[in-house]
Amino acid sequence: MIHVVGIGLDGAQGLSAPVREIVEAATLLVGSDRHLGYFPEHRARRLVLGDLRLTLKSLRRKLDRAASARENPAIAAGESETASPAIDPERVVVLVSGDPLFFGLGRLLLTEFPPESLHFYPHLSCVQLAFNRVKVPWQDACIVSAHGRSLDECLEALQRGEQKIAVLTDRENSPSAIARVLLGLDLPSQYEFWVCENLGGSDERVRSFAVNGEEAIAALDAESFASLNVVVLVRRRGEVADELEIDDLPRLGLSDRTFLTFRDRPGLMTKREIRLIVLGELGLKPDQTVWDVGAGTGTVAIEVARLFSSSQVYAIEKTAAGINLIEQNCQRLQVRNVISIHGNAPDILDRLPVPDRIFIGGTGGRLRQILGVCAGQLAKGGKIVLAIATVEHLTTAFNWIRDWNWPHRALQVQVSRSVPVAHLTRFAPLNPVTIVTITKPK
Image 1 (tube, rainbow, N blue to C red):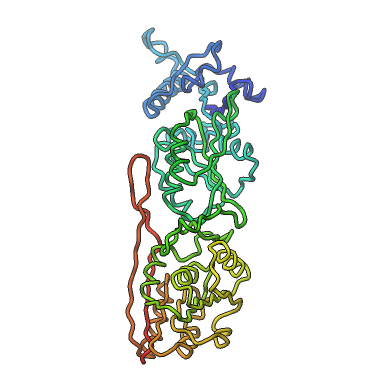
Image 2: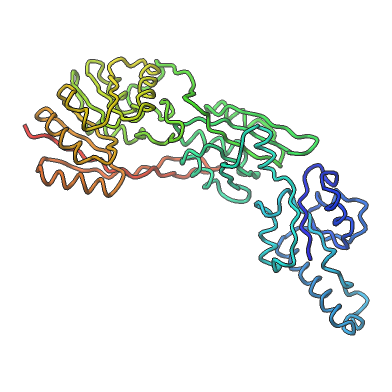
């Protein structure tokens, strides 16, 4: 039996009495210099974990010799005096950090030794300690290891809008590198950013940092973090956002983070790059009536309203949460010509003024019916623009166009944003969208 013992920064005193007895009875201690240093008076022989593969092969040879010596005492007696003495496998202890089977050495040990020969004694993991220090339940957290790996998993978790993320770092994928990824993604949701250092040790330190601009990143760069650190990202609950300086905002192409968004679906909005194309396809003019069907958080409706204050924009949304967000975003951006309409499309559409332009962003599975009502209500020469994310909805739209035989065109948009990763830059793709523009004959 090989005993794999997890240990924290509090050293031997953090072990339970039974586990401490197992370590004290060892005839061979295996671990890093730091772990072995917790037992300076131990009499066991030591095997330092340097190159993991070579160290484990060395351990396997020692154990194989010990097993052969027990089965064939004559062979052991004939060995030279310099040969390694027999070792009882039951007295081998491997020291590791935290939980051996949580991004630890345990996984590698299981590839080198049969499971029945290994016994694990986990300590508290750094992630468990980190979430407890920031006082956040973590049973639903997304755990990412960037230690010796890339930040791809972290990037994907942020794009999904995970509520809680813990990132195991290294020298390259440092807290400031993670903050750069967070800032570079231009997410609609905001995260609390915690750096937890030397967890469980006497020099433990847990701090929260703002990640809201290049100045904040520069401040993180200037910090000196302990090599043993974990980054915890917690998405803010509720409609919480920084105050806006309206005069500093562009007239066209607002950042996604400008808008308040859904708590449980932070990515559910028409992204900035898609909005810009949609606005161009709508062919907007002053003094128009515009419908935004399935308005969500109101991003397209608000962009239209800011461009043309003389136009009337109707944001139709079936959820109360969406209507609340539309109204908050209008207030936040000081927009007064968006009228929010709570109701299901197409049932509610015949009550609205005749539109010159219609954008359809959400359909609730009733695309064909919505197109039929919109076609009847739309002014002659008007345009309908759809942003479609699925093949099935695209097929429905093309079948409807074929039946009505209206002029149309489609753009398939595949956009990737540059994101800083460590000292390099890579592209992070957004979901592909097909934009279909339909014109009502005059």
